[in-house]
Each structure stands twice: as C-alpha cells, then as structure tokens.
Image (tube, rainbow, N blue to C red):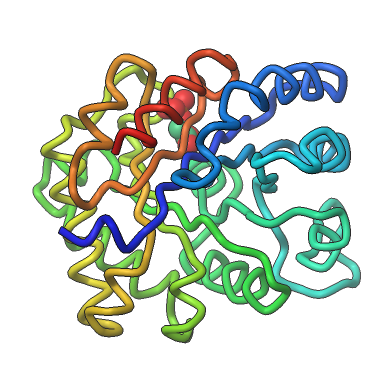
Length: 258
Ligand code: PGA
C-alpha cells in the first residue's frame, strides 16, 4: 500500500521496570545494535519517569529517541503525582505513550482523558503514541471495529490533520498484551487497515496515509517479521521483548527489512 510514505517506528514500552543504572546499561547495549537503522526506522524507548533524564543523557547523539509512559493534561497545579508535558519536553523527551490499556484498566483512564492528554502533548511539541484495542470479550462479541472506531474518534476528537500526522496510533488488542497470545498477522493487519480507513473518514486519504500505525501485544523476536511485513503495520509497541537488547534489536532489524 503506502508504506513507503511512512517511517517505521519501533518503540519499547518498559512499563514499571528498571532502575537508573539498569536503564543506562540496557540503553548502552541497545545503541550500537540499532545504529544501522537510523535512516529507516525510528527507534524509541519509553521509560519510567525516574529514568527519563538518564535515558536522554545515555542516548544523546545516537538514533535512539526517548519517550515517557504517560503525561497529564494540565500545564501545572495541584495534581499530586502527575507530570506535565512541559516537564517532559524540558528533560528532552520526544514521545509519550497515552491511553495504554494498563492505564485504562488499572488507573481509570478514559477516552476523554486520553483525548485531553493527547492534545496537551501535541500542544507542548511531544509526539503522542495513542493506544487503542479491544478486550477479549469485545472481540468474541464481534464488536472489535465498533470499539476501535469509538476510541479513535474520541481519542482524536478536535485533533487537527496536521497534528494527527505527528501522532502514532498503537493497535494493542488487550487480550494480547503480556499474555504471549499475539494477534495473527492477518488479524492485526485487518484492524490496522480499519484504523487507517477510519482516519481517512475523519480526515482525508493523504492524512490517513501519513499516520504511523503500530501493532503491540506480545510482539517478539520470533513473530515480528510476519507482523511487520503487513502493509498497514508500520511498527511495533513492544513490552516484554523491549527489556532484552538482542530481542529488541531483532524487532528493529525486522522493521528495517520491512
Ligand atoms: P507486551 O506489551 O509486548 O509485553 O505484550 C505490549 C505493550 O503493553 O505495549
């Protein structure tokens, strides 16, 4: 299709893992492995807040970009425990994961707050990685497309075409996250193509063709090549496998191959 229009993006989502020395060691191991991917693949590590400064310093001058795992939508104020977009930008962060299913499941994240966070991130100059995905029973009830369309419409409400081109969409079926159950390449492609068709309806074809859509959910060194070969899967959001430099690099190299 129009994959040539988009740069592949492989992002690690470290979740609540790694102390600062561990983060530094992992990034030092990843950097030389992925250096060859510079022109073809955007390589990102999304790390816990406490690791951000270490991660930015460790990857300075390399092709590894750093992302946060969440951001609050207010600029500042009485929001104990929260981190603003400006704070992330000041540290040197470029990307931020928003609306991950673990945030939706365990921390009361809703499409409304995902939308607010997305707009706040874009306004500050961060590139959001907005996560969408259906639950197992929603797939069983055959309403995957309704669920995804609703999330895309609500999460991107009032986001301009220009801004949506800076936004990465991660399709992460909730039943596949951390479970070892991966969507088949055909299942993942079907939903990623549906996301692009939904973007085309909301915006236009050129805009939809410009948006990077990732698959996430038990993507690993063994299954990545088949997933990344699909025309609408432009990259991956990688949890467990991003914590091992060799495995993460195998996925990056599969994206280089396309
Ligand atoms: P997983 O996590 O690769 O461990 O399934 C993916 C994610 O949560 O982004």
